[in-house]
Image (cartoon, rainbow, N blue to C red; front, side, top):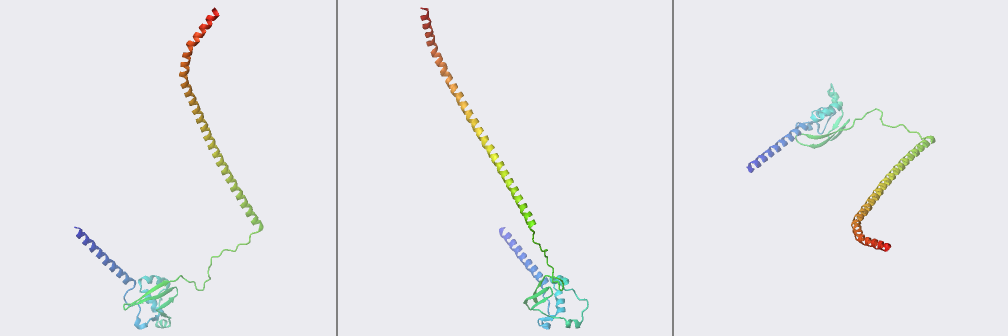
Length: 228
C-alpha cells in the first residue's frame, strides 16, 4: 500500500514537472517567438528605422509600449524608407527607448528593451523652488526670544507644580503611615495592660483572703485593750 502511494506521488510529481516545463516553453515562445524577427541575411545587422519599428511591434510584450511611444505611420513610401535613419541592432537608442542585443541564435535574436523616462524637448525645465526668505528683523528676533522665554517659564512653573504635588503626596503617605504605627503601638500597650490586670486580679483576691483573719484578730486585740 505504501509502495502504491509512493508511485502515485512520483507520477504526480513527474506530470507537474512536465506541465511546468511545457508552460515555461510556451511563455518563451510567446515572449520571444522563433520566427525571424530580423532578417540577418538581408540587413547584415543593420536595417532602416521604419522596418525596425514594424518588427518591434510584432513582439507581444513590446507592442503596447511601442504603441504609446512610437505611433504607427499612416502612409509610408519607398522614398521615405530610404531616407529614414539606419539603426544599429547591436546597441541603439530611439527617443525614449533603448534596445540592447542579448544573444544570437539560429532561430532568431534576443533583445532587451529598456524604457527611459520621458523627455520634454524644447520645453522649459520645471523645478520646484521655494521663494527666497528675507532676513528677519531685530523686532522679529526679539519677539521670538520673548516667546521662547515665556514658554520656558511656563514649563518651569508646570515642573515646580508637579514637584510640589509629588512632595505633598509623599508627606500625606508618611503621615498616614506614622499615625497607623502610633495607633498599633497604643493598641498593643492597652492590650498588654489589660492582660497584666487580669493576671494580677487572682493574686490580689488571694492576698485579701489571707489578710482578712489577721486583720480581724488585730481588731479584736485592739478592742480588748480599749475595754480593759
